Every structure is written in C-alpha cells, then in structure tokens.
Length: 403
View 1 (cartoon, rainbow, N blue to C red):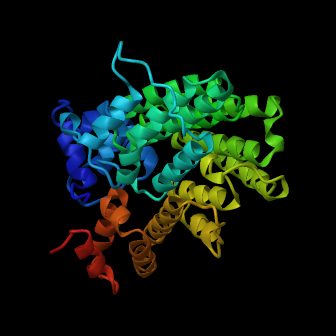
View 2 (view 1 turned 60 degrees about the horizontal axis):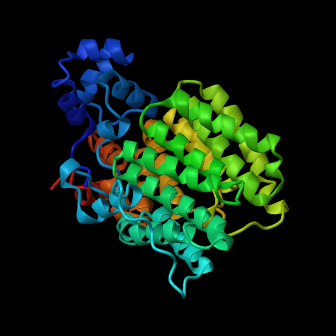
C-alpha cells in the first residue's frame, strides 16, 4: 500500500542531497511555498509538471519521488525471485550458451498467442502473473529466432514483443535503465523481423520510459521522429499502422505537456482524436492485444488526463461527460480515467463528486487503487477538508489513511 505520502518522500530525498527548501525551489523552479506545504503535509498531491520539476531538482527519477509503481514492490538488492528471473531473461549471462533450437512440437502461432495473453494480463495490472510467464516467453522466442531460416523472421518478431513486455515490467518495477536495455534489444530483434510496425511500436515504449526518467525532450524527439517516419513510409493507411502512429502521437503530446507546452500538446491530441475516428473505417488489423492502444476512447482518456494535470479541471469533466469506452479499451485505462475524474472534482472543490468517483474506482480496481500513490494522495486531500462527504471515511480506512 502507498503509505508514504509525497511530502514525507520529498523531505527524505531533499535532506541527504544537502538542499534547503529554498535551494530546492531555486533548482526546480517550484515555489518554496509549495515545497513547504508538501513537506508539512498541508498539501498532499501535486500536478505532474511540478513533480517532474521537483524530481529534476533533486536529481532523481520521477518513480523515486512517487514511490513504487502500483501493484509491485521493488527493493534494489532485495528484488524477489520472479523479477530476478525476468532480469536474467532480458540480460542473459555473458558468454552463456546460445538458445536451443525449437522443440519438435513448437508452434509460432501458439507462441504469439501466449505473448498476446501476457500483454492482456499486463494491461489488467496483473503484473505478478506476467512476471511468472515472461522468462519462458523470452526464452522460447529466442529459440524461435535461432531456428530454421523459414521461421526466423517470425521468431524475431516474437522476441521483439516479448522483450518489449519485459521493458514495460521493468518500468513498473522502477528499473528504467534495465527497461531501456531490454527495449534496445527488442528493437534489434524487431529490425530482423518482417513487421514494419514493430520498431515504431517499441520506440513508443522507449519514449514512455524516457518520460519516467524525466527525459522529456528525448521522449518528444523519438516519438515525433518515429511518427513522421511512419507517415513518410505510408504506414498509416491500415488500422494497425494508424494505431501505432496514434500511440506515438499521444506520447509526443504527453511529453510536450509535461514540458509545459500544454497548447502544443492539446493541438496534437485534437489531431490524434480526429485520426482515431478513421480506425474503424479501415480494414481490420491483427490481434489488437499486440498493437498500440489507439481509439477515440483512448485519445479522449488521454485528453482528460492532460487537462487534469495542467489545471483545466472543468474542461476535463466536460471531456469525460457521457464518454462511451470501446471494447478494446484496456482495464488500466479505465481505472486511470476514474482517478483523473476524481482529481478534477477535487480540484474544483466538489468533494461529493470526487468520493462517488473514487467509490467506482474502488469497485473496479481495488488493489490498483491501494497501491497507487496519487489515488492515496487524492483521498488524503479530501480527508484534510473540514467537512467529509458520505463515503469518505470508508475510502480512508480502505487506504489505511485512518484507523
């Protein structure tokens, strides 16, 4: 459970760095009053640009400031055996034996299905399940890539998707350097496959990892380059190609917004939403579990998120009003939407509306909510109000904020 609040983490990181509150304010560009309010626990949450600025001022990754990602606990040298196995699969030992050839009953279709199932578990935030199966998936994909010439391209495609998933798991564990190593190896495998969409899909994961490290300019650059290259190559005329382009465009918009250029980000997202309407009009693509998440629903969810994070809470609620989510919207995106709507209600002083939304979030994703730092922070903000709306105490007890 995310018990350590933002202010306590901020103070714990600031003091060993030898920084006063005033020095951190100067280095980060965040007002000393905001820093004081956070550390004195008079303020329990902050918008993402503020969090990025504080992380940069402290010289730490954003994940360090926010705490462990939802659903997983990382502990340096104390990582559990499942994550150790994932790390070893991503980075096999130097001069170790090469992968064995595929077994006689090996099925490329079955391997792709297993990888797609693992991505489904990932999007449902079932990270422990993913870590359990991932080492074998990577090993089997390496074997397929080392097999007969006829099946080698498919093997490298499978290896690219499996290593990409390994990179995502590493990010969720707060191991972003390991994630980038895995994603670079995924790109090397993708370049030896016959799938022209696989490299830009993995580049999108690289952009996301850069964002988690606070490398916003790098994230914006690689996402825009990959999206532009897809257009130049004519890959946006299919449903799959348009989804990959859309994922990259949304990543670029997020990076622009987190860099403080909200207007540029909003324009990108409006373009993405118009293009997303084309997806259903194009010929059906491959298994959607293996392709970037991009639909009118996902774009609208991301627009809500950006609006909340950058102080446009009323606009966020307007965007979310009456939204109908498509069937392929991952469960994790649905939970993010509820959290963002709750934050918008909180920012506008509508505590009852925030509580109703958080109660829906608790029903949909109770474990995710318990482990998510921002969800806990929103409830703490509500609990600090003089008047508590019905249902708030139950939420506060559920999250361990009050006994």
